[in-house]
Length: 486
Image (cartoon, rainbow, N blue to C red; front, side, top):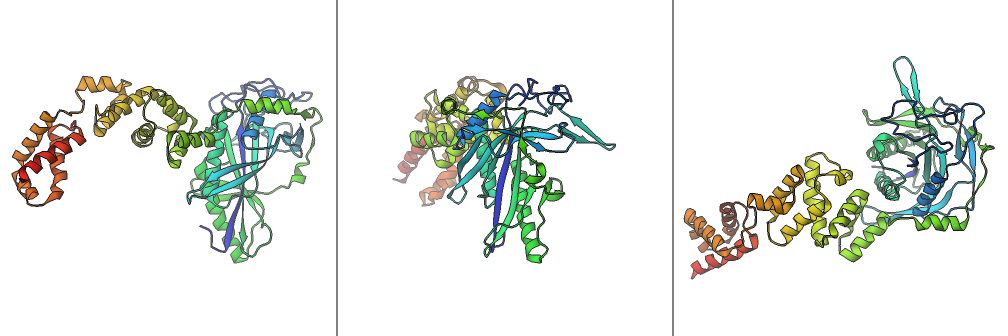
């Protein structure tokens, strides 16, 4: 979208709530901040009452270290919490406990594959722990605050400004979301705000030797909004620089209805946050033994799983990438493989027929584990098609009934007499009927009009009610037609 003389420069901050049972600095339980009644999961610490003391949640530290290691980060031997002055109603203490100059993880990277076939490395500057804020709801008469979310462990993952397109930002965000879900530290439900994205956007002219002023778009809760906001801000920056107006450093919001950014406030600098070490919390010393223990808990991550699917199962890069993009889809696929089904057939049916069915029924791929069709049942259907018991068209019909009823494919085939007809005598009879009903076709075909073979075969399949084995029908029909040429 950018003019050829301009380059998009984006650094991403992704904030991910961690799936701990209790909050970052107290034993207060973590609840669903969307469905739980307001202010029912609060305690003196999360309400910032005078005289309260924070205590570090060890499980949150371990989850954050898992993420750091999955992102190829170094885990420094010492990390420390700091106070960040933050005068907004959603943090009643008047400051947020975060990390500043001694974060939990540094110097990592993620490699992403772009649509042009290139691979790009996105460097991770840091990942640090902090506490989430409460939630403000604005009404006609004022504002309401729900403190259920205040104090929930929040991991902020910051990239270097290595992203140069909205597409690259989207691919990175999807990959990072997949990693968090695979690790089990975040459920990836962006609609509930458990993962929020903030791009820092600027542009660079081909003659520039340094970065220009940037703007930050706050609290995006969908990857689609991330893509569109980067496209919009990039175009806005270029227009502003080319007109001589310039860009002022600011915090922006994304107006989904109008598909544009709006200024929220002009940006604070780090100095205005007045960071200083949190006096009520100790420095955290991270031994190399502890890091090794955490590394041993890491599951197979999406990129490694995709490589294995390609190398061991012969899947294409695209198919493997789609199968591993959602943890639930990858698990469904692998469970299906335990039945001995052909891996490529299973992948083709999942990516083709099953996902088409999901689209038609408005089901997301993440919900695959809760459908009525189990992974083993689905694999059973694929095996029936591969084995020639039913043809592909019948398989699609059976799949729809499996989705509606939860019945096994074989049971549906048996109950409805859907088994594929491979008996040559039955096929011969159908061919004879087709020829008797269409004598002109036979004359034209014998006269050299070979392209009529397809329509004639379609008629035979119709006589067989779609249950004919296409390979058998083709072979028998060709044999019978050739006999008539003599």
